[in-house]
Image 1 (cartoon, helix red, strand yellow):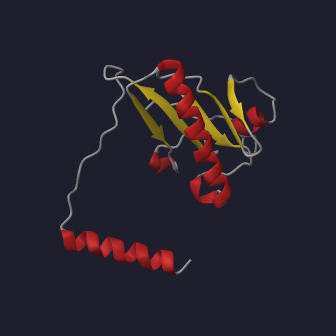
Image 2: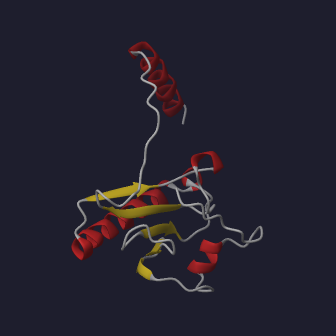
Length: 148
């Protein structure tokens, strides 16, 4: 994963500056709640970031409407990438928290066109828990959802 870290001083988010027009961007799309712009560290041509305009550190700080708006914009950008570049694959990537590999703490999603030989790898070690462990995990999640 590329290691760009936002070094802006506290309270001066780089994406908030971009949304406000204080710094330049290669804007692809914008609506009332979201903005889509090319990543400065293009992994492949068309690599686009979709961000919400209101500052929210991560997915858990979005309203349900903002989350839906971000996915609508990512969907629109994905279709544009297919039309412009016709990649055989596409990766959506959204990271939360330092341990989740988030490097800019303003909610955003990568929309990344992919080719088989592009050198990008996404892998993790499978843990393959037993069915009863999976059912225990599912029960915990169902209880958490029911308590909302």
